[in-house]
Structure formats: C-alpha cells, structure tokens
Image: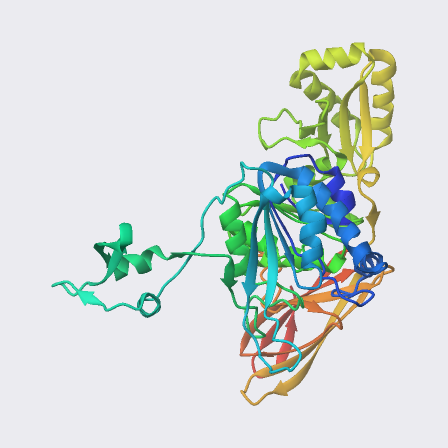
Length: 523
C-alpha cells in the first residue's frame, strides 16, 4: 500500500526490506554556509536541520551518506536513483557518496535541469540557472524503461534542421536526410512524421520552474515542477513499480507517481510536509478507483481511527502491528490478516468486545488453517490475535478459560498498544460579512481558531466543500487561520481544517446562503 511516513528517514529506511524499491528520487536540503535552513518551520524539521548542519560540509556529507547507503540496500538490482543537488555540494556528493556506494561504473548521467528566470548582470559570476540531478544505476541490469521524447513544433523542427523545405504534389512537406559513407545517400524525411515522433532528450533538461500564478503552486518554497518528476518517473519505472522519496517535502514526487499509476512511499521529518502532501493527494485523487494510501504519524486521534472506513482501518492497523493484510474483503472466514509467522489476525473497529466475538474468532482460526491451529495448540503457542479498542469482562474471562481448559491461546491487543492515541485539536470557525466588493460580490472574512496541547501547526481551507468528494484544499498552508473570500449569489459550504504539531487534525464546516445578505444554514 502507498505510504506517507512521518519520522527520521534513516530510521525508517533501516526498517525497509532489501531490494524492495524500483526507483528513488531524493531532493535533500541543499548545503550552504548557514547553520541551518528551515522551510516548514515545525519542531521535527528544525531538529533535523540543526543536526545536519552542525559540523560543516563533512558533517553534511556523512549525514547524507549513511542514508544513501540504506537507499542502495533497498533498491532493486534493476533500480535507479536520481539525487537532486546544486553547486554547494554536488562535487562532494558524487565523489564521496555516489561513486563510493553505487560505484563509478554505475554512473549514468549528470543531468542538468536548466530553468528560466530573471537574469541580472554581474561582474563576479554568471547567473546560476540550473540544478544537478545525478542518475546512478544499481547494476548493469538497470535500463531506461521508457526513453523520454521532447515535442517539436513544425517551425522549431525546420529551424533546427536549417534546410530547404520541399513539398510533394499533395502539399506534404519534407526535407532531405543524409546517410551512408560520406553521407552520400539521400532520403526524404517527412516533417509531420518527425514532429509526431519527437526528439530523444539529452542530459540537459529545459523545464520551467513553478511561477507564482501556477495551479501547481502550494506555497512550498523549494517545490519542484511536476513536469520534472514526470520525466524521471516515466523514464525510470513502469506502472505498478514502487517509487520512494525519502525527503517528500511538498509531495510532488508522490503526487506524480500516484497519477502515473506507480506505488509510492514518501518520508519526511516534518508534520507539515506529511499533512500537506496528504491533502495534495486527496485533492488530486478524483478517481474512485485511485489507489488508497496510509499516513503514519507519531500519534493518532481516537475519533479518526474509530470511525474511519472499516477496511482501511483493518489494513492500517495490521501494517502498524507488523502483519500482512488479507487483500480479500469477502470470503475471508473473518480473518483480516496474519503475522509473518502466519498467525491469523482479526481486527474489530469497536470498544468493549464481548465473549461472542471470542467464540466466533476461535472457530474462524480453526477453519482458517486446521493443521496450524492444532500445532500451535500442541506447542502452547499463540493461535490467533484479536485487535480492538477495548475488551469487556466477558471477553477477558473467555480468553482465560480457553487457555486453561482447552490449551488455546488467543492474544488480545488494544489499538493503543500499537499506535499511541491522543486528543485531536479543538476548532471553531466564525465569519463576518464585509459587504459587497467592487465586483458586486459578497466579501466575507473567515476566522478559524484551533486549540491543542501540542500547538497548532497550520490551517487549510476548502471554499466549495462537498462531503461526498471529501476535503479538497483550495488553500493548503495558512499559518494564521484568517481568510477573506468573495462569493456570488448562491449556497456554499466552507470547510477549514486545523493540523497540530503531532499531525492530528480537526475539521469545521459552515453552510452559508448568499442572497442580498449572508445567512448561516444548518448542516
């Protein structure tokens, strides 16, 4: 399953299976002479930045190197890594990290991402308008899966060829092509075919940066354009391959991977990075058949876990427990998953589980694998694991009776033993009618106020909320909780989401009717 994981990527990478990922793209924080740079500004990121910059360039290289070592381990033998960097440390990264870990023979390209922008004259140096992306293979088996092509226009193709254009009787345009020894052989190249086929790209990629008016822009200062990640993901992976981004940042890699029908894993130490990436995916996933994903935080609120989709909850909690999910939703005999030792697991999204659930689970695990059940019983081992929010007195007594009288061991596990549970933040939403603006639209001031013991991280807004489609953020990052919006006559649902420093969230919704005045309607 697709995953967004909050935490130190080194610790998470060490837990991942060897040779399990097809493509890794990483855009680590660029090295500079400052002690540290902060993008999101939350506590997890600040701690991480302070650590990586503490000892200058050598400390930075060692910090990055131990992570790349783990990436090399988890990359498949046919896999690729694309490491994005700039002039501050690119030479160190290539010589001291990539050449040593992947080997000089597995270096494929130093890709130059050339982007446009304001150019100014200087007597010291030329304008720096590119980043470097190092492309390394895991082994000789690695190949470019889908070679990227650049599109031509008719005029750009003719201009590049610098040849006279000829026409057939039907008006079809062509130029001469030359081949053979001394290029003595001539043949026709039809311009429409050449334009349709495109041109194979080289190692200099002219892809614009995201401008201030772009629909892609989410407010993340080092956000990379989707076109850049589309080229990398398409050329180095196929559909259903697994793409990893251990510095997920604004979520561009996973958003593009999701759109291109790849599986993905995104990691970041910043709560804000994880939650913004989550909302970006939710906004992009309009297809009901889109692949589901889980978000792994440090803490989870009871209401979100207790009342989420049952199958999603089963999959999430079994994975957090370290088990393997049952992909079937019907005909599974009541078994939702198993441990890596094949011990059956059942998950109940309920409190105060009673004796009847224990009796039914005991019958289910016996039918699931009779020989395994009998062997575990004979060897005095756990025969099944039942996970729930809490267990009643009857269930606990029945577990004790089965063990003492029948030698059947069923282990009861509370959800809070698997994932820490905390209180989600409180949230209120008020509005003020500011009257009509110059466009004869109603201008409304919205004020959201969140409260959390952990501290509020940010707010996000959906000004055309639809409960069936879910929260689709129009504004993803609002540090203050205040917005002014203009509305035409009609009815609207305005939703605000608050996220605290633990990544827990709450949502508040207003339903407004605008027709000469603003009135609040009951939801």
